[in-house]
Length: 138
Image (cartoon, rainbow, N blue to C red):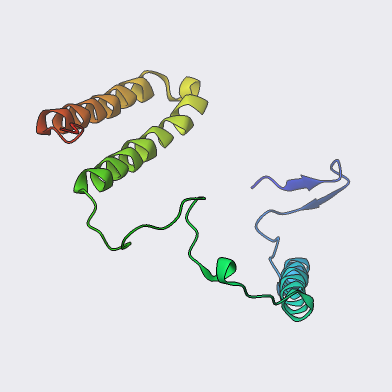
């Protein structure tokens, strides 16, 4: 077994003997405690010291600068949700191409063939969506 060299070979630590002790996590725990303490302290003082003027304008619902008209519980066309789900589906599948692009040379011809199969599957899915008319807004 080859040792893991540290400090230019003067001292070496066998990779298998290196241990992860609970004391090694102390800086992370301290950072989390400080971050949570900062958030709690900031929220406490802003709620205690901040102004509390409640006017009719501040208590009305506000939606992107537009006055609220009607009920928010009106039915929405399923097409919006379908397009959103299709976008997420194809977007996530495109993310799988990044590791392939990074390791393109190491994968060789096998990786290229696998990516062509993956792209063909995506294309078949997209053609299916178009044939079903899922993206037609009529």
